[in-house]
Image (cartoon, rainbow, N blue to C red; front, side, top):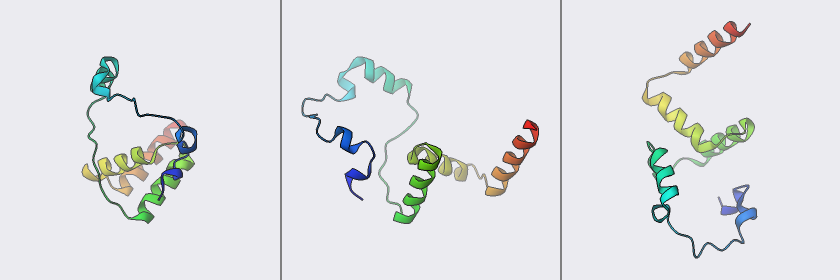
Length: 97
């Protein structure tokens, strides 16, 4: 997978970031980052087909694949099964009618 698989790559590919500062050196951004805490940056390897599925789902929903993966991991960690998700979805739909 290359960098240009990102839809925004072409838009920013020619920009010069050589003088860019880290967030920690810009107080307003550091404060914003601290307020948005609760997440950790990690590196992990996933199967290409799994990644492709999450990217396709994100594209269909207009979301972000990392967010979808995080939600799937959260549900797994909490022991939420597909049956639970289907039941909750049906309950919500029935209450909207």
